[in-house]
Length: 365
Image 1 (cartoon, rainbow, N blue to C red):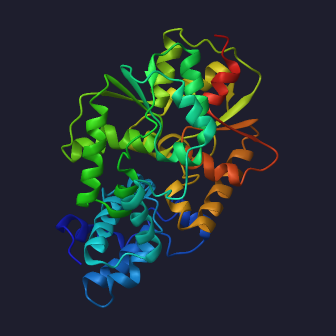
Image 2: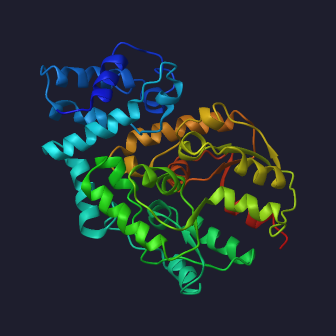
C-alpha cells in the first residue's frame, strides 16, 4: 500500500493515541474498539509493515463515516479523515475493495447513482415539472434528497415557490461526486463526476445546495481539486436565513420547542452553525442537544446505510436518545442523509421535521 508521507505519519501517530476515542459516533453506537481512529490506524500500520494485507483490513476502513469528529478533537493536528480517504483510493487502485463497496461503485457507473434501483417519486417529478425550464437560480437537491427524502425535496420546492423565488430544478440532475469521493477518494472517476457537475453549475448565477454534503463539495472540495465553476453557491440554510433577513419569509413564532441536529459538513467543514438557529428562533424556542455545533455527532449516513444498515440504525438511535433528553417537541434536521436514518428509528415521543417543513408551517406569506 502506497500512502503519502503525511498520512504514513498520521497512521503512526494515531495508533498510539486515544484522544478521540470518546467522540466517534460509530464507536459509541457499537461499543466496539474497532470503530475508533486508533484501531483503524493499528490495522493500517500492520499493512505498511507488511504483517497484514490491505484486503483484510479494508472493511474496517469503510466503517468510518468521515464525519471529522476525530480530526476536530485532535489537539496535535492529525487528520484521520484524510488518511481514510487516501486508503480507500489505494484499495480501489489495488482492486481489493469489499464486495458491498464495489457493488455501489458499479451502480454509479451504470446509472450515475448508488441508488441504482430507485426512481424519482411521482409527486417530486410533478413539482419539478411545475418549475420554469430555465432560471438564474438552481436548487441543487442532491442524490440523498432525490431518492431518500423526496418529501423534504418537495417541501423545499414549495417553500421557494411560496417565497416568490425564481428558480428551477434539474430532473436529470448530475451527481455532485459526493458518493464517489466518499467511497473511492481522489480517483479519476471522482474528478470526472465533479467536472461534469461543475459544467452544469455554470449555467446559473446562483446555486442553492440543498444537501450539506454537496455544499461542502461545491464550496471546498472543488477548489482543492482545482475544479472551477462560475456560480455563486449558497447553502440551503444560509439561503433561507437570507430570505428571513430580507423579510421575504415572515414566520409566525409558535409555542413549539426545537432541537437542531447540526450536519457535520455544515458545522465542521463549512463553519456554519448559526443560520439554522436564526430560522428556528423565528419559529419557536431552541433547546440545544448534547454535542451540537462544531461538536455535533452523526445521526445517520445515506451511503453507509446502503452497506451498514444495522450500524446506522444504532447511530440514529443514539442520537434520538440525545434529542429526547432535551424535552423538545421537535428534532430538526438539515440533511436528508440524517433525516432518512432518523425517520426509520423515530420514537413516538418527539416529532421529526426538516427546516423547510417548519417554515412552511410557520410562514404567513
